[in-house]
Length: 106
Length: 106
DNA sequence: ACATATTTTCCGGTATACCGAACTTAGTTC
DNA sequence: GAACTAAGTTCGGTATACCGGAAAATATGT
Image 1 (cartoon, helix red, strand yellow):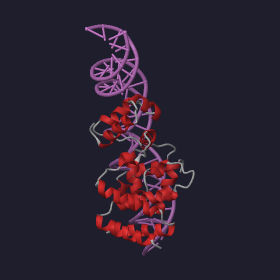
Image 2 (cartoon, helix red, strand yellow; image 1 turned 30 degrees about the vertical axis):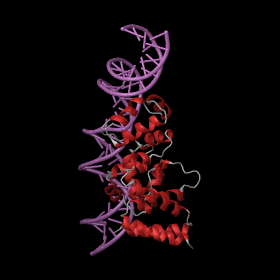
Image 3 (cartoon, protein in one colour; image 1 turned 60 degrees about the horizontal axis):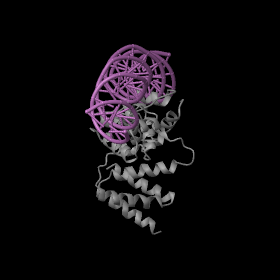
Image 4 (cartoon, chains in turn brown, yellow, cyan, red; image 1 turned 180 degrees about the vertical axis):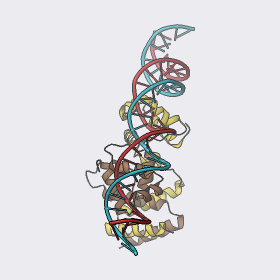
């Protein structure tokens, strides 16, 4: 599994129930290249492709870039959530906002 | 100036008082390539290089990647929502995340 | 107007990101 | 235990990311 990016990617992919091929298709990458990302010693994917992959896995691109020293886990969950939220239509956003307000009052 | 990434980069670089050469040196990139990023029609920098550049400019790599689709007024609402979300406890965040996932599937 | 210092643009070459398709391995069913 | 299937692995080739250095262009001083 070789490198930092590789092991993170492999772990996340399996957690999300993706196979190399299914994730490759979803993120518009070849599965052979996906495999290289997970297994080769050194690699240097383009920002666009990495972002596409990260997107499918529900995280942000820098999740794969940061060396996790402190506890970025929650931060990345938050960022991913926010990105998902932004992709919604306005009436759905509105519903989420109301739910949030309800939470804040308890 | 051609592309989205390019104009953002050029603007930010000048705001921060960098010349092509000084930023290139700071971010460990060749100045010629920096120029290409700013001026060529199409380009596809690696995540690492883009992150290094973004770092020197005091932004995150995603800054160059997101297409700013949402309108500025909506953006304000979004940011406020995100701030509220982050102030929640992890259980409540988790619930919101599940609701978001449900929305995304429709 | 001329020198010269600074920044930007151009270009040839090399390394490698990324691909398609073939091959291997591991499960599953009969 | 052969025959299918789905997942993972390997590999040759092509496009392009990225570089060094040279040439324009632009700014600054005299």
